[in-house]
Image (cartoon, rainbow, N blue to C red; front, side, top):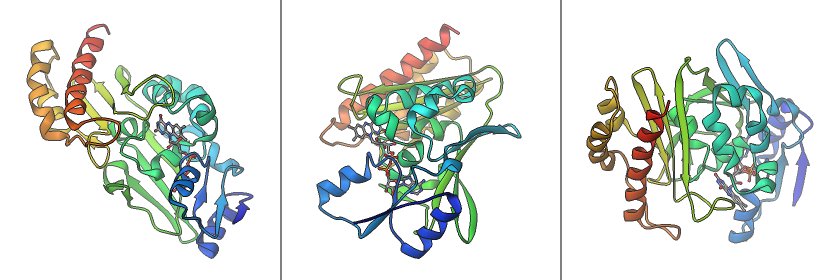
Length: 274
Ligand SMILES: Cc1cc2nc3c(=O)[nH]c(=O)nc-3n(C[C@H](O)[C@H](O)[C@H](O)COP(=O)(O)OP(=O)(O)OC[C@H]3O[C@@H](n4cnc5c(N)ncnc54)[C@H](O)[C@@H]3O)c2cc1C
C-alpha cells in the first residue's frame, strides 16, 4: 500500500483529487476497520503532519478547531477549556491516553459512528464543518451533515479542514455525559451533551439512533421554563419521541432508553447546583 505523507494542506487537497485515496489521520478507526474487513485501499493520504489542520483559534466570535487536532490537543487547549468545557470532557473520554494522542476530532466526525463521543457536543453547539477541495470550500451545518447510518454530506475529493463553533454566550452551562462499560477504552452505550443558555436548551445524544440526534421535542418543551424535577419528569415522557435507541453488541435498546432518561434527570440535578 502506498502511504503518501501530505506536506501541507494544498498538497493534501491536490493528492486527494489526483489519487482518490482515503485520508489517514490518526488511523485509530480506519486501520482497525481495514484489518477487520480485509479490504485494503491501494494507498492512503496521511495528513498527520499538516500543521494548518492542527490550529485552534478564536476569530470573530467563532472558535475554529482544525480537523487534524488530536483529542489530547483539543482537551488541553485553553480556548476550548474556557468556552467549551463539555468538548474538553468528551475528548478526555475517547479511548484512553494513547488513542487520544493519535485520534483526531476530524476523524471522529468523518468516521460518522453514532457512538462518536465528540458528536453530541458539536451537535448541541450547532457546529459547522468546513470541507475543502481543490474546487473550493463548503461549510455544512452539523445538523445536516449526517444523512443516515455512517452516511455523511462529504464528497470524494474533499477534506474536512475545520469545525467551527460560535463562542457560547456568557453563563452558558454545558455538560457532557457518557455511559460505557468502564471509564477507559469503552465505546459509549449512550453519550449526551446538555446545554442551557439563558432559558434556551440544546440537547443531543449519541448511540441512541443511526446518527447523533438533537432532541427537538424535549428542547421545545423545556425552552423558557424554569427547570425543576417536576418539569424534567414531564420532559422524560417526550424523550422517546426524539430518540430511537439501537440494539447492538454493546447494549439493548431498552437499556439505552432507560439510561438516556437517567442522564437528562442528572442534568437537571447538576443545573440545580449552578
Ligand atoms: C481502542 C480504541 C478505543 C476507542 N474509543 C473511542 C471512544 O471512547 N470514543 C470515540 O468516539 N471513539 C473511540 N475510538 C474511535 C477513534 O479513536 C475515534 O473515532 C478517533 O477520533 C478517530 O480519529 P482518527 O484521526 O484516528 O481517524 P482515522 O482512523 O484516521 O480516520 C477515520 C475516518 O475519517 C476519515 N478522515 C479522517 N480525517 C479526515 C479529514 N480531515 N478529512 C476527510 N476524511 C477524514 C478517514 O479517511 C476515515 O474514513 C476508539 C478507537 C480505538 C481503536
